[in-house]
Length: 322
Length: 99
Length: 117
Image (cartoon, each protein chain N blue to C red):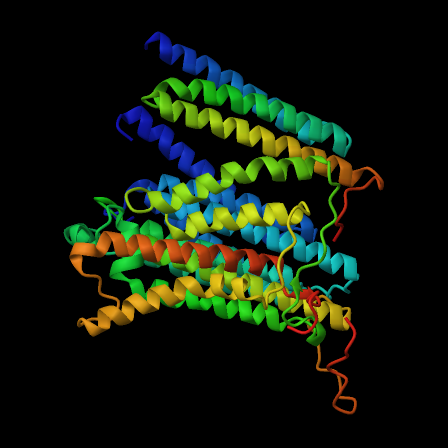
């Protein structure tokens, strides 16, 4: 983007990436084979994370690659396999008239959004300067983390509770006898096989990287969501290789890990409320408090995401009634 | 253009060549196992050359080592995934998860 | 073309608009619940890209949309996990991968909840 040649090459790259995004999205939505569609969606997610890098939004790129492509991909591949195992009857395709109407509506919506994009007014300063002016008071150097934890703490607090609500919803899809039991089906992996070896090798690196990404969120791209996702992925890898058995979801340590983040965040918010404003951090200790909240959130996010992917309890708790 | 730039250009070109070869193999080879072979081997090598070409421009030893780490991890993951896919495809010939 | 957006941000914003359309089509026109879920996710992702690209100012990316988008990605994931679990349970109970065309007639009130999976 510095020289003329560079910007032309960059523009060509952006056009190619945009075309690939549209092609993979089309394959994911309109392809005939469902499994192929899910694979196309994972590819789409990785390309989308590249687009975020091009837009300079590295924090979003990390979240998109880890959650949008990674965890969602695992979830969907698992669901396709489960439906195939059940032998579920697929619904009849939509009639051509319905498809044409849907396509017409979709083109209309896309066109309206495109027109809105082109009609954006000039000289919008955005909220970037405002964030930059107040960054000092937030106690962190990464403006995205400052917005997430300090300036718009409400959003993040409620989001962490949304995650918990979704998990309770997933658990509610279990049979009565399995309620509070062991999540997911038993994994079968050969003890000495490549999967087990891979799952023994990677966690040591993954845990370090996950914690680093959380800590780096204070001054560089990263944070509780991205790092927590990496830690959840490490756990899921070990669980899929049969190296660890996920605990019954009614166990106290599981419940504590799930509740820790929202509880700490809410608790600090209430302390702030006693001092005047809900969720307000005193400037002198803001940096420390952000680290405390991020650490607690990381534990809960990692536990919640891993359990969301493992799915509803499918086997009764070994210790009898929960 | 300095010698380092020429080196990068050469390495990136070779890397891109391997990626093209791997993709051609994926599209042209007849069955799953040969396709897997083309994809894993050629792409790992291609990524290696891309890493080699990018390394001198990262401004330091640490970033360069990080990129090498990325390459090693990508190879490890690709190798494992290829093994698992190949094994899953062994008993029944068409790839699993139709529909 | 809005002169305020950098050219590459405009490209991604327009691609995002098209992605919303593609995802909406998948959500409406396809019948399989997992396919609809893929459409829903692409629609959301396209909207995030529009939002993020429109937030590109002369000083670079705006951190506020970025934070909101990260929140959105996580919420979209939790919705996906919930729908996946519901679709799996429904398939296990009825042997069908999607809701039927019409509501089946009730049989003594208990037909809707068989016990075995």
